[in-house]
Length: 89
Image (cartoon, rainbow, N blue to C red; front, side):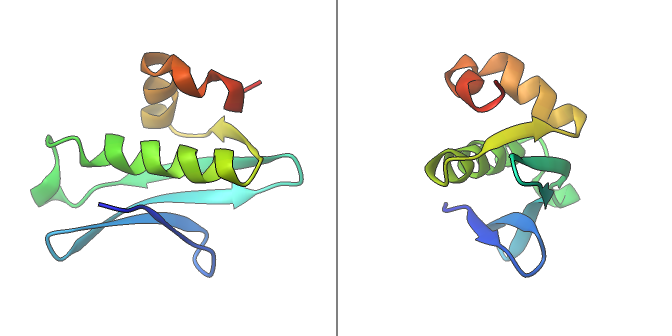
């Protein structure tokens, strides 16, 4: 599964079984603010949102940006995954 940056819709996307999980974001000069994550109901409870956020954070890191967690899921993910702490500083 590969996360992509849909710049036209300002969201990271992950295709799973014909559905799309996504994380909306806003771009600022200094950071990417992830404002909302959503996984289709039929796919919930399978770690899809975690895969989505992990891929989004890797893309943000590759672009040299910082991240601001604007939704609770991303806040929790960052607390549980200290390997992304460099993105929040």
